Length: 354
Image 1 (tube, rainbow, N blue to C red):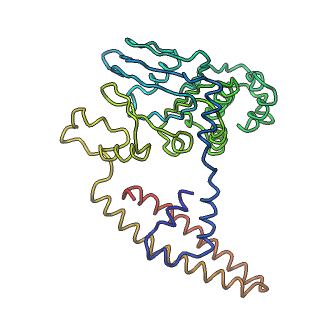
Image 2 (image 1 turned 60 degrees about the vertical axis):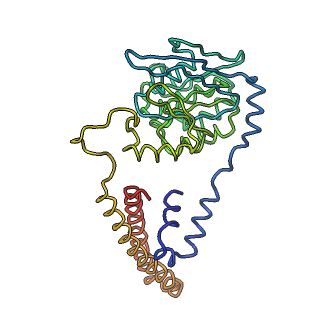
């Protein structure tokens, strides 16, 4: 979808020659995006499961060694809220999740949890999985639900009887996530859940979370995942603050680009030394990327025209099998070149900040 949107957005010279069938196909793909969640309905279900009180941080201080992670933070998480938590590496996002789960205690203030709250925390480590246990034996819960989730997460056939120690890192991550979901918590804390997951498993997880009626807090650098599964984004700031981002994850990334990169330090921290190389593309690199986009646009325009010509010739040569075979080979080469150029255009667009 991202590639098709980029193709549709390209400048007027390319847009004027876009074939109608490709535009229709792109629009069809975009329209096939899953419908948005019914937030009110999910919050109603969540309130029925959780009550009105979920987790409240009240005037919380949290330190790690000499570092202040949280300073007098008050933050309320309500039933059915879907929260993304972002910030530079090492700022304390995982510590906030551990504080909410009860694995970590505040230095001052208190963390208040509702009476019906059942929290489950997906950490970044795989330590709780026992290598000698077989996949099927490690799964507990409702048999029908377990069977359905095992299949959805790709555990079928020989994988069901494989020992956990023989699984790949991605497969163990899937199993860790599956086991957590089978416990049916009403508060779910996910710390970098997309690590090691393939696209198919990511889609399964996104679909599952779309209908999940509970309170969700996700720490992730994957902006597309956060866009899909959360409704509001908070940032952990230097100095121990937690702030809601009105413009969401897109606003956060724009802010980080302005400060010098996604993992840039907060603006309040000391500026880098003058001899340090600036992060992000230079002005010259941006100009060169925009020139490259223009060149690629012109080549794509010519290839689009060639593709239309080949389609017309194929219609005219429908009964001339040798000629048709040659035209199909020519068309395949044109399409391969177009796909390669489109990838180049996307890379250049990212450098140019388009």
